[in-house]
Image (cartoon, rainbow, N blue to C red):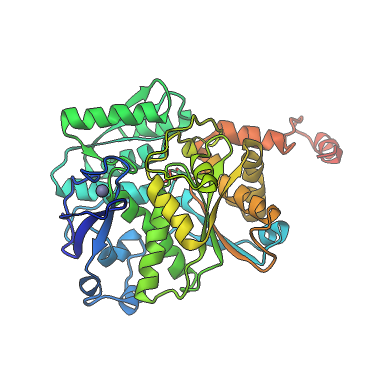
Amino acid sequence: MISPAVTALRCVLCATEYPPAADRYVCDACGPAGTLDVEYDWDRVLAGWGREALAADPDSTMWRWGPMLPLATDAMRSSLAIGATPVYEAPRLAAAAGVRRVWVKDEGRQPTGSLKDRASAMVAAIGAGFGAEVITTASTGNAASALAGVTASMGLRSVIFVPEAAPPAKVTQLLAYGATVMLVQGGYSAAFELSQQAVARYGWYDRNTGINPYTTEGKKTALLELAEQLGWSMPDAVFVAVGDGSIIGGLHKGLVELHRLGWIDRIPRLFGVQAAGSDYLAQAYESGEEVAAKPAIAAHTVADSISADLPRDRVKAMRAVRHTGGTFVRVPDEAILAAIAVLARGCGVFAEPAAAAAWAGVERAVADGLLDGDATVAVLATGSGLKDVAAAQRAVAAAGSRPMTIEPNLEALEQALEEPG
Ligand SMILES: *Cc1c(COP(=O)(O)O)cnc(C)c1O
Ligand SMILES: [Zn+2]
C-alpha cells in the first residue's frame, strides 16, 4: 500500500513522472539506468506531523519516519526492530586520524546485521501490500540476508540469488531464515541478470537494488536517524562504503529532504568509499564520464558487499557526491582489512570489510588533504564483523594479533604475559 503522500515516481535521467505503483521499477524510456525517485506532497507529509510529533513518538524504529516514507500507515510491516542503531562519538579515532570529531553509526546492530534491513523492510512492506507472496533479489549477501529475515518475520517467501563466492556466514543466515537460495556461478552481475529473468518469468516482487525505488526510501532512514541523533547538527562530512551506490543515494535523499524541511541547516559532503578493486564510480567521477552508459568494470575485493562491476544505483550515487561537494575515494584491500582492527580497537565497533572500508576512506581522505584537522566526520559502519569471519581472521593476523595457548596454571600464564605481544 503506497502512501497517499507519494505523488510520483520520477526518472533520475529524463525526469518523466510515473504514477505511484508498487511494481513500477525503472523508467520505460531510459531502461535500467533510469532509476526512479519517490516524490512527495510535502504539505501532506507535514499535516499533523513535524519535529515535535517526532520527539514525542515512542517508536524508535525506522517507522518513526512514517510520514516521510512511501508506505501507507496501515500497511503490513515487519515486526523486527529495524533502525535505532547507536551512534558513538569516537575521540581516539578522531585523534588518530587527525580530525576534530568522529561519530560512528553502528548499522551492524540491525536485526540481520547490516543497514540493508532498512531497504528490505520497506520493500517487503510495499510488496506485501501489493499482494506479493514471493519477493526476490540478487545480492552480494547482505541485501539477501535482510530480505530473508524480513520476509521470514512476515510469513512471506524469498528467493535469493547470490554469487557462488558469497561468505558462508551470509549464505547460512539465508538458509536459517528459510530462503530459497541460488548460488549463481559467476559474480554479482550474473546473479542480478538471472534474478531479472526470473522476475519476468515468475512475476515475483523485485527487491533488487537499483531497480526497486523503495530501497532508497528505506536507506534514507539511516540519515534521518543520524541527523536526529546528532541533534540536527550535521558534521562536515559523511563517509560510507559504496558498491551499487544505493546507500549513498539514500543518504543524499534524506539530506535533501531534511534540508528542504529546514530541520538541518547544511548538507554535509558525502564521501563514497570504494575498494581499489571495485572502483567504477571513482573512475567515472575522475574522468567525468556519464555513468548511465558506462560499461561494467570487473571487480575483485575482499569487501564482498561493495564488489560491484556495474553499480546499479550509479546515477543516484554520482548525483549524491556531486551535489554535496564530496568525492569518491578508493582504498586497497590491505587498508580495508587494517581498518577492521582500527575501528574495533578505536571505538569497539566490529565491522565487516565493506563497513570498515568507510573508516579506511577517512584515513585516505585525510592523507589526501580532503579533510583538515578541524573537520567533523560521521562514518556509517554498514555491517557486522560477524558477517565475514574469514576476512576478520585475516585482519587480526595482519595486525599481528594471535591467541596464546597455555597450560592451565598461573606459571604458564605469567610466562605468556611476559612474551612480547
Ligand atoms: C550493501 C553494502 C554496502 C554498499 O551499499 P551500496 O548501496 O551497494 O553502495 C556497504 N556496506 C555493507 C556492509 C553493505 O552490505
Ligand atoms: Zn527516463
